[in-house]
Image 1 (cartoon, rainbow, N blue to C red):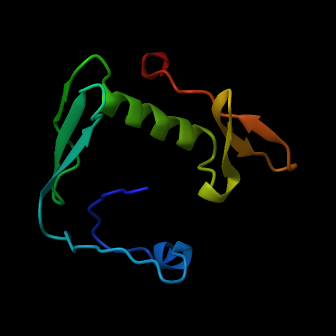
Image 2 (tube, rainbow, N blue to C red):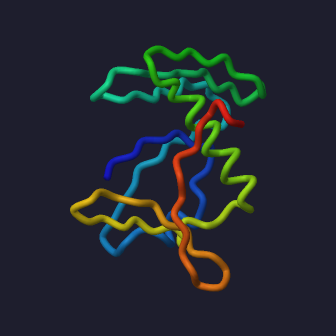
Image 3 (tube, helix red, strand yellow):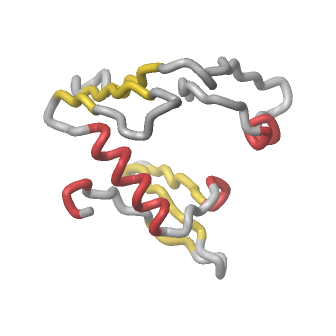
Length: 121
């Protein structure tokens, strides 16, 4: 899996989660503005927004049938509403029928995480 992100500081938790021999590169963006790009290379939709450290409102541009930023925002709101579960509680079940995201509950049981509909939030 390849992910690209711009951060102001590298959280030490990232280092703790890196497997032996793993590495990541980070750039300090404390005082620099930057643009975030999100795209689906298979279907074509994209979103972008400019992040400025001195501001809190960001103008979002989206194009395509899927509104990718709305999907990210809906997932973020779901995460907040679910108590911000740590990544260690998530699992991915994969078989011939497909794949399903699971969330481990406090009692050890697992429940399926359904896709979040941005229009329902």
